[in-house]
Length: 605
Image (cartoon, rainbow, N blue to C red; front, side):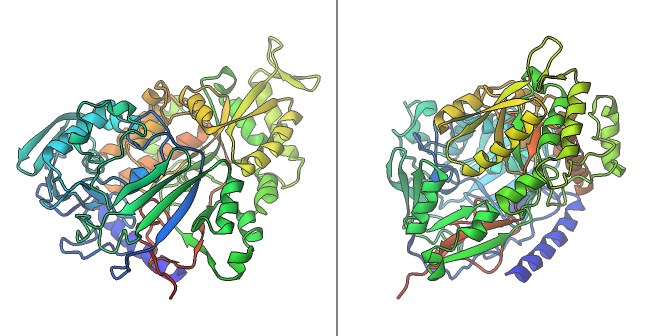
């Protein structure tokens, strides 16, 4: 399996080399790549990482911690099973897990981008149908885009503001014109979910909850559900697109069940007992020590380690810079210095997990840790006066000696707090007005791992006179607090792809920092960060694009917004032996679009 993966990596690198070529759009195509051409030709049979001969049938089930009160993943209100967004809806184009910034036709048979890149036109497949048998029309597309852009989830609104017009240009064609220069917009528009307009006439789309079971074009339809407990999807035997090249060899499982649990322990026990057919494990120590239960030793359960080329993303404890105490970068750096990563990693993971060293570490997009050079330096220098220490000169996380004392980190943290105006007095770090440095770390129920980390971390903070209270609440309360930025520090994760773009403004852009419910939970407001994302979106070659991402990465790390923990260059996935997957692993590895999409079930006998 590993040799196949690296053959795949080599092919991806070769394809990436072609990205430096000028974009050739300006005529209808079967797919689109932001730089260069799609790797697969117009007459491709299937995606390269699927098994076109996989049998249909069987069922799979997976668990999720929390609850749900809505079946509509496209609105701000409510909690939705995260898989519905990917399994129960389709878009005009589909993303290849083997090619960053490349899409192939799904509901659309072709895509055409203007020479200037200021408009995109799609032609719908004549055979495209909703699950009720009705045809997908241009009217459905236009209604979906307008509704999502104005009433839908915040993830859709930023890019919709860049649309000047959307109009029908033929019986099955629709054209979208943009009001800004943004090379990614054509791809973003290709990934919008298409909904059935007729289902929502006379209804409040923003408050749909559980009242409306979606009618969509996807291979799966919702067969049954019980609020907060489970959702069952059934493969539509009349699915319209089984012979579309993008779909061949995928969506072979007949039934997908999503089960919900109060916490991770209950979910793991359900998997051990056979109530679930797969389980993703993020804790390396648990993977090594607790996956020796009966179903594993008997061979009923297979332990798979699936490699990937994705960026690490960021995972750790985000500091809310809207709070006075965390508005000073020196205080934030002190929190990082006090976090004894090597000791915590050993206690929680047996020392097996690598630390996140940048937002795009583990990929070609990750920053270099020395002084900025070349195009990266050229892009950062105009903002030099406003950059935090390390952005240009180089920034790296502290490394402790691995002992519980972490003497160097504790000493450095105290020095930084002193520089920021805090005084260590009678065992308490206090401000010039005598106010103690205390804050609350907000967490949600269900993670024993986070609790174990914080138990060590809060003790370390006490050594520098900082007292942190851990407040654990249920997922509904937690989501409400986070949406309103009502927290001091919280555990966060942000998965990042090999094709970062407009979503970066939603994660760390200035405008998003002021919008409740946005994903900029740290409250980052740095003009240079917004400017670097714009450089990413307008780069005309891959060299400039990669340099802009690396420059962004440097500013995010030098901003000290998160106390990073670890990532895994592999996905640890335990599953029933009847679940099978192709030998070829896509570049993105175990990512939405992989399980259950390209898996199948082989029943015994």
